[in-house]
Image (tube, rainbow, N blue to C red; front, side, top):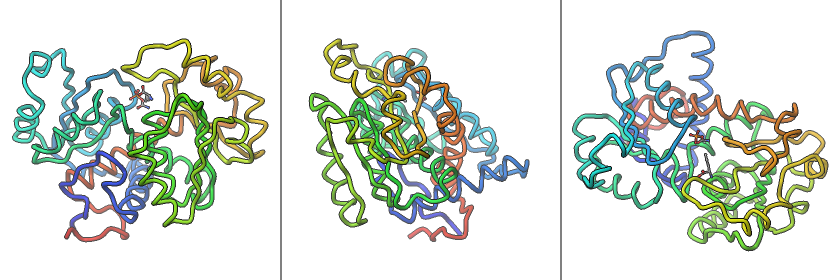
Length: 322
Ligand code: CP
Ligand code: NVA
């Protein structure tokens, strides 16, 4: 049976149906078990993934490269410094060439529109490995991590406190699709991307979940199951003292954690800056899922690659391609 995600792109979580999103979580859990039990799962034997990186990366690069190796395939790392992209070859021409040689393209880009340009001409799946707007593969790995810890996702409340950015945007998209309530605690000066917020609010209404936006960090975290944060200056942004000062009350520290549910877990997509968005004490504390999130990037990448590049169905819940 061919997976319904075969040949498709993953630029935003809204590219996928609820059933497909849930299936990726199931597949990632299945692949994690197979790896832990050393059961071979070389379902992409002989496949190649081109990986375009306009920005640095540790988890995304290693997570996709190791994923391809464990699935029996190969990943090619491409930085603009080393390719003709850095000398003016167009994104479209690059996508045409990579489509002739590789089975998929994963790209980390400054502008989300570059991903759309790639996807418009690529004849193989394009996967968003982070843009200025979204980081969907991170949110999926986060959800897998939460499901492992809490048992189920429905009804949980995630409070993201800090800069309104690609991570909080992908969380706005993800939360309602999995029955999770989402609170965004961010200074008014950070704003929220309307193009992401509107469809997220509509999805929340359909799902019966809540999305709350507040500039009060304590209101954001009150009784929450998860406290999530990310860096205050994202890649490609200039450090701005006024921005950092506005964010100071949003640091995840002992006082903020005390306002959440007693069993609350701290999450961070990494890399983290201790003393900025998270205190060193909380970063080193035991009530966090941070490195489980990082590991789960690998398992989630494998599920995504198996489905999109290979059309491989790993679970019984998968649907036939239309
Ligand atoms: N969380 C994340 O995407 O990490 P990298 O920037 O190291 O890939
Ligand atoms: N918001 C961060 C996420 C890093 C994984 C950035 O874009 O730099």
